[in-house]
Every structure is written in structure tokens, then in C-alpha cells.
Length: 405
Ligand code: ADP
Image (cartoon, rainbow, N blue to C red; front, side, top):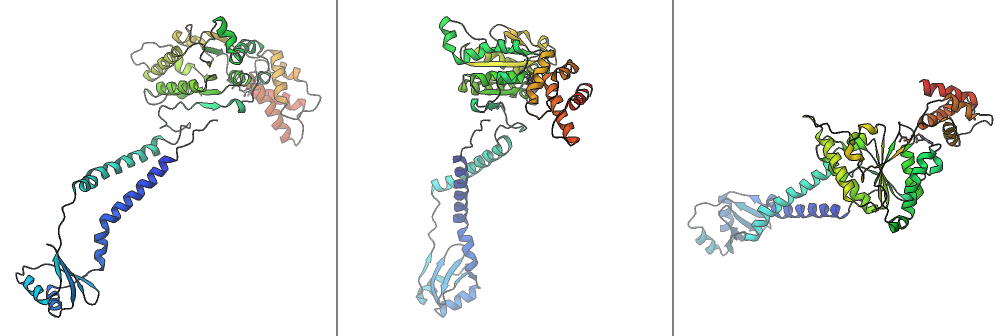
């Protein structure tokens, strides 16, 4: 699955910002921190020290008089209405000065009063939104607004081929044209033919529709996007539509590719025009229609959608230029069931006398998924009875478990 790396620069930005804020507070707070080292004395003590000339230097402002004693300590006292003070200080010969009060520069006060708070709020806002809405677009994150959540499989990691899908020869034959097109689109464009944009895989659950879609991508060696229709319909109106947009944007970037939408009926159901219609689903469906109309027949993006109820789909979705091709994926017949059993039995150890034909006959009406389950249940039963190989009785027993429940 492709993972989008998080930009590291944003982290650096936050570190920088934190350092900057620290520096500013340090600088603003420094005078107050220094205060701790200054000893506060009475005015009378100040006068006494002045007379004894035990002061090196005096600094005053309207709030206090700060002076450094000959003992090296710093003292301060509150100012008094003392008209003779200047005269007395002059007589004592101690250097004294009043602080020149600088009006803070306009730029500085602008930065401190306006720019800094705005920056802090902005940074906080960014941080919060990342915390709440970010964290990638993984499924289960309800705040991953507008991201499609589609799983992407690289061609390199696609291991399913047509040979893994047993039975379903008709469906495979239908889909092999698409594989051929993805391999060699020029053959089709040269003559002016365009591929269907959408193919509907119609069949009951567990018959291998997802497998077939993956196999098409695997055979053609193109990326495979997979998403379930229900994943589009979120609790917020408009989110589904933006997910569709995002999905198609990603797909177009990776074209040629296969987009697989499972349970497409979750978004593609007929619109009834009821008063209390499902706005979200309709918007999502409309966006899907718009996106499908938006790209050309030969753009290399082919959408495969799976459904069990084609008759419940909105006719707009089935119009030419959209999902105009149907591939039935039926429950496997006897031969198909036997093949499927054999494909899955390759993954387990069986005794040589296992008769898959009998098992297939016993499992009438089973889907591919159920047959895969029968094999697995048989293997579990063998383990339970402490054997290292699966025998006929294990499989016969598990047919009953899986089919009859
Ligand atoms: P669907 O999408 O039609 O519901 P899936 O493709 O998800 O079905 O199939 C579910 C599982 O059933 C597969 O992972 C596979 O193990 C098994 N299966 C279904 N059909 C077949 C088949 N024709 N050949 C081999 N395995 C199958």
C-alpha cells in the first residue's frame, strides 16, 4: 500500500516557532527575573548610605531608585517627594542619573502586540487541526475529510492472476480484453475504438469479484485502487463527493490503472426523489457520474465496480459512457467448485486419496468464498484431531459446518 510521507519541514517549523516564542518571553521577562537579585531597603537607609558615601552609582526612574553600594550589592527603594535630593546627591559626589525612558519603537510594539499573537494563534490552529483532522488518511479516522481512503496496490505487490480465480471462465474471457487494452492501448486507439470506462461485475457475494478485479490489475501490471461504496457515504454531507474527487485525482495520476469500487449499490442506488432523500448519497453519486464523464475513454483509468443487485442501480450509472458493460460472475458450477477447491487445497497438506469431485458435489450452491472456507475448516479439523494431513472426512465434515452452519 502506498504511503504518503509526512513533510518533515513542518516539524522544523514548529521547533523553530517554539524556540522563537521562548526567546521572546525570555527577553520580555528578563528585567523581572533580574529583580530578585536587588535588595529593597528603606528610604532612610538610602539617605544614610548617601551620607556615608557608601554608594557607587544611582539610577532613578519615576517608580524607584536603584543604587549600587560600594559592597557590590544592588539596592532599590521607592522614590519620595524630596526636593533636596538632587542637591544632596550632588554634594555627595556620587554619580547619579535618571533613566531615559524610550518610547518603544512602533515596529516593536506592532510585532509584540499584533504579529506575535496572530502567529501564535495560527500555529496553535494548525497544530490542533493536524491533531484532529490529520494523521494521514487511514480508514477509521473520521476526520480524514475528503480523502478517498482508497487502498492502493502497486503492480509489484499484486500477486493475484487469472489462474488464481478458478472457474469463472466467462468472466475472465470478458475481462481479458481490458487486460489486452492496458497492455497495448495503441492497438485500440489506432482503429478509433475506445475502452469502456466502467465495467460492472455482477454476482452474489464471495464469487470472486474482488479477486477478478485484482487479477485484471495483476495481469496488466497496473496499479490497483480499491474502495468500498459504503466508505464514500460519511456522516457529513459533501464528504463523499470530495472523496470521489480525490479518488479520481489519484487514479488519473497513476493511469493506466484499475479502480475497484466494491458494493457500488451503496452509492449508486436509484434516486427516488423522495422529500427526505439521502443528500449525501446523491451528491456522491452525482460526483461519480461527473468524474466518469470527465475523463476520456482512453485515459487508461478503468473502473470495475461490484454489485449484487444491478437492478437497484440508478439508470444514470448504467448509461453508455459509464458502467455500460456487465460481466456476470455467477456461483460456480460443479466443475468450477472442484477447481476452486483444488486451488485452495494447494495451500494445505492433504492425503492423496481426497476426492474433490465428491466434495464439490456435496457443496452445491456454495460460493468461492465458502469453498475456501471449507478447505480451511477441514485443515482446522485435522489439527484438532492431531493429524498432519487433511483427509476426506475432514472436508466432508466441514462442508456440513460451512453450508449448513
Ligand atoms: P466478492 O468480491 O465477489 O465478494 P471475493 O473476491 O472477495 O468475493 O472472494 C472472497 C474470497 O473467496 C477470495 O479471497 C477467495 O479466497 C475466495 N474465492 C472466491 N471466488 C473464488 C474463485 N473463483 N477462485 C478461487 N477463490 C475464490
